[in-house]
Length: 176
Image (cartoon, rainbow, N blue to C red; front, top):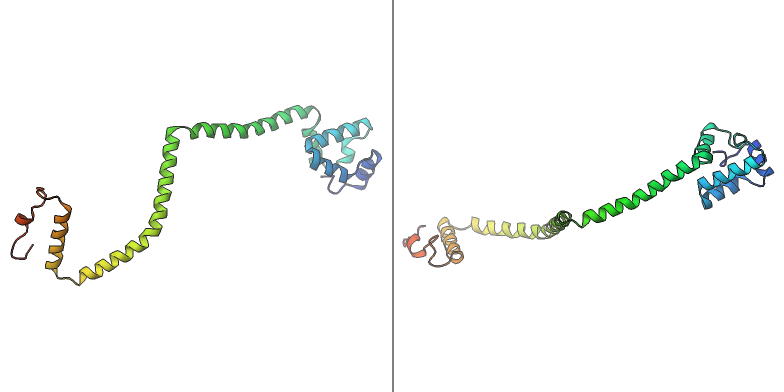
């Protein structure tokens, strides 16, 4: 744009009305682009200087014309709508986050995350323990393993249960 590196003609015209490219850049930073361009356009018009004389390139001129004059009100309306839409999204999220489905899904996500975290810490130790148990069991005789399974079942299943009757289901000759 002409205010980054103004032509010699543009710099002289700005100087003739008490402005410079640096002053315009500072005004854009401090007051915003739309307000600065509107003020610049009004100042140039009051002094009989055409906007095209200061802003030489068509692209820059089109941008200034779209942001000022009779286009100013529609441009401001669009910018206000954009600014308000951000607040509308926040409000909509607040409403959705209050629903039971959202809260349930959030709780599931938290539970899943916790499960993954716990699993990542417990799993290596569990793998080591199972590896050790496997080594011990692989060295045992099959009849010892059978008795161990029967004993474990007797400890787990309540006495008198029809699922397992130790005296009846376990042969006395040592074979299971």
